[in-house]
Image (tube, rainbow, N blue to C red; front, side, top):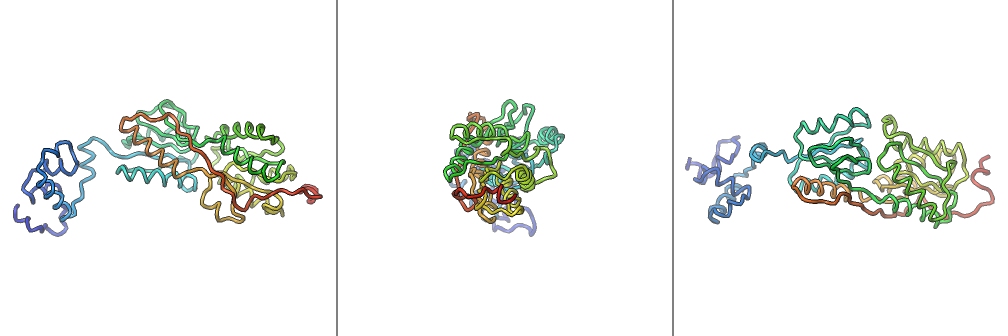
Length: 359
């Protein structure tokens, strides 16, 4: 085998660990110990280690991933379960998740349950069949404990053993209501999130509390809901459009709207414009999340930014630490940020209310 010392292997032949060992005249175990940085590597001569790395570079050797899995009896893979794959909210979270998993050389795959109750119920067991070492749940409920670490991005995943990464919903609504009241708005409408959604009840309770502290009245007349979490037929923008139309048919005696998220705010903007009103001239509109579209619609959307990429990265880092047996906080709470753009403006008293002007 020393004939390969010239660095020539058969065309198309895969360069294996055995090939590297034979080329160098050492055992495959020696090569493996060096390449995996095993504790035993310190017992191997520095000159031999240098020769091994030189050969690896020369032949562009790539370790056999499956062999690594078999040897370690691990898969180095995690699952990410989301309601929808295509929405910008999940995409930004997954972007952050991917960055941290890539650093740790972990693989991941994303599965979408599409809000279907039976899929939500069955997916955890199906994912376990794929030998994942952990799971990240995005805005997805979980009813039972799992034998692998689970990190959730939302309040809805509250089974035993779940670690959560969440946003401070009180600070979200506090910033939103303060901004609108600071602009002179006192008649403010609100969107309540979809029923059974992770943040809906937590955020609504926080909103009622914050509004009372600031001196803004929350009424049923100026509240619209965005449907059910399990309604798979409508996008969040469609939900926002319908909620705004329902609100406008009931009353137009309000000058500002704080939506549940950016998607519902964008839908509301279209509905408000469709009935002949202007934004922010007649009604100021705010969202929550700061998805990419928020900066490019007309008018550009004022919103409360959730650090979605950072939340995804923290969730992935937390999961990796749990996989490695480290202690982690039961819950990590991140803070939002007010982003002021074009869809909100100061309210000036008019001789006619919006309602009267359109009667």
